[in-house]
Image 1 (cartoon, rainbow, N blue to C red):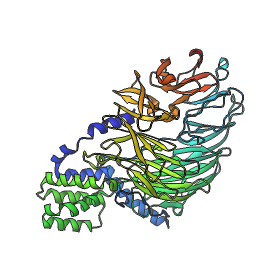
Image 2: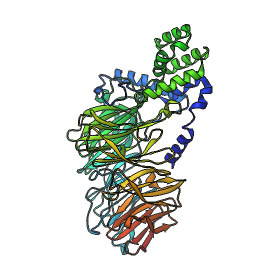
Image 3: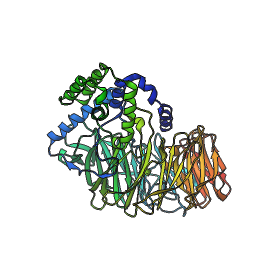
Image 4: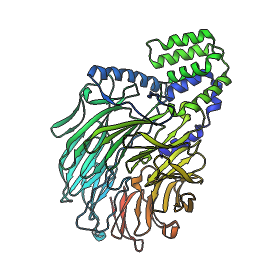
Length: 621
């Protein structure tokens, strides 16, 4: 809901550029100061190979770097408007090959990459369900439905991983492994204490991959201790931490690590400096990717603008004082205050200056917002490549690896620079060394990306401001990605899910109601909406996380949770139809075991027979 409101607020404010012109040049300085952070200002908007990361040489160098970065960040936050980035939500994990006595047809948590599991609130082994609610975690005897009952309760809540007879619970302050061979009496096997924030996790081939974030500033004592596993601590010295070669906003040290989930033991780790509000994590079969979105120094951007486009508008003595100001050993915040005073005292043609500014930003917007990528090879867990591309990704679905190539969708948004110009959306294709080999620019000009899905040699991007264009891309030639089809609809879609090779499902909102659309994409050049369903709901958790979505292809249905009920929706015959509603519950998740659908809320668990859609059992939680 908060994300939806943020997007609505952005659309309302998106046209605020022209009225701000009445505020003059002082307003422009302020907008730059509060909207931008630090970036490696490189290239002409083309994806380029970024300079190599290096480790800090000493604690003194680390402290000095953080001292300067802290000064920049305090200046921006002190003006009342935070740096904007792509927030990381806590990760969610899924069981790998869970089984046991019970159902032979068992649903799995919806994940991005098949075989790479993500954390979620519900896990099942085919006989028992493990559900972590707001207060605690319930172990539920689920199969057969006639034996439905709560077997035991764990006093912690969080997100879950189930690996054979091991249940891993990830909470805000730690990770706990429970031995559940006897589900009625779980036994704590190990515990990892977190002195950091868990920002992402994946389970792959029996190993747990984690990314944590530890807040840092110039006076933070070293070594860092992001976690404690039993009697051993993970210690991160300054000389262990990778740093960018040029200044950037930095308030956190990210630590990527491999953990043995059977023993709770850290096997490998590496750490790098970053900014807590602008990262996305994506994992493929062989690599872990982490992104940072950067913005340039506001004082430097404005100085360059005045030097290139404003000298004829400035009195010579004013320009001389500006040049002297740039040479002073002052913080960027102090320089912006002084620049504001200098320009306010000069008589400047405001409309002309604003017009030149908009042209300047339009021509350079892909330089003013870029994303840096770090690629970690899972085989040896080392950084093997890094790169930089324009714009910022929306979420993990903005990245996808296929045939050794990484595809990345980004939005470049001048709104963030303090004026009402048009945004742009791009797709970049990078090789194994993260060199850009192909690009596709300006999808949905004036809009921003709301949903992305890469499926083999095809890509689907939904952009939105007033309408909801679905762009279909042909990615079969990495050096020449193309848009081959487009379809516009009202409202927006924020999650895309393939039903089959030729059917694509989209879930979003229209007129403040949850919308479900079914598309025929058998002809990429002519995508068609086969059916649309508007629900009497204003929100679904699927709009926040793909883990809330459940597809049951055997019965031709999917489950959609909402704040007031749970919906079972059929797509048989390419028609969308609600076949059952579970009412008066705040549905969170659903799983299927054989031909039974288990609808789970904080209050109760309802079992439906998928052959008749009748309720066969129900218990309170």
